[in-house]
Length: 310
Image (cartoon, rainbow, N blue to C red; front, side, top):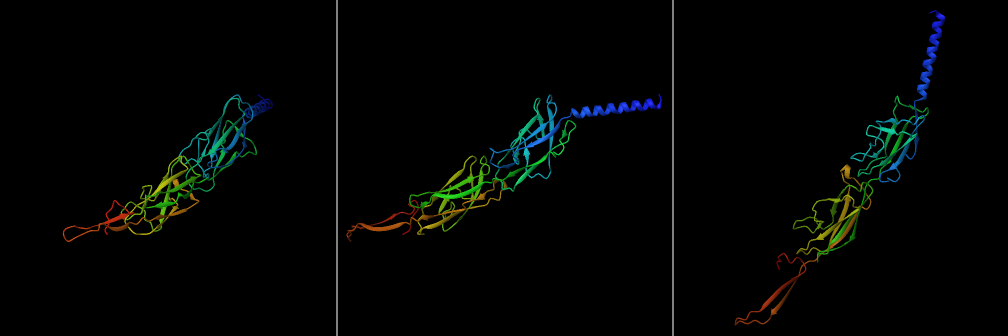
């Protein structure tokens, strides 16, 4: 084979390879992203984040699309709800794969925020289209974007819808804990502190008990927006006067049951019911001949279940 013919064959082969490459590239779909709402707030599931994967070319086959999550992300993304998950994307697998189905030129992915009982700064997850031999990424489309998650922490308020508390009766009171924000689906542990003249507890020296709980930890049950705590005063045989009581919400150091405090304090006065003693001669006729007289010492108020020394 002479040199001229060899050059001609090589030229034709190069042209054929080039055409094959062009045809191959023409059959490779090109991906781009159509970004919608990307800023979300915990508890606002009605306004999720949304974006679509758009492909060019044939839709005769399904297309597996891969994503990566940047290590700088501060929010956790998962296909289902779970502990520590901030964002839920059911159409994006745990391995960050989405599949554009047969016949579809685009595929929409919805990302919904998940509530928790943590106090957090603004968080984000950074997603990017991952390179793959089965598709190309459109020029000028980096394929990278951020989804921002604003916190909606639990908030606690305290009040006293029934502030009248008295030893007589006894007349009980109600201390109410209200919650908003956060994850209502989980219980919320609230810490209270007590001050004033009245003493909390179950001992003989105590003046009252709050929901029959001598500790400072009270739980608002899962699914409940509030909890009423019954304040029961103890009747005693002490002359102590009316006593003040201040109940205050304090921060919880448990990061999974954290809350902000709106109304921090409520107060009441426990009205004393001191024992009263009277004496009367119920038989005021007495004689040395053996007819005794009788004095009766009677008491009212106080605690009749305890002895009283007069």
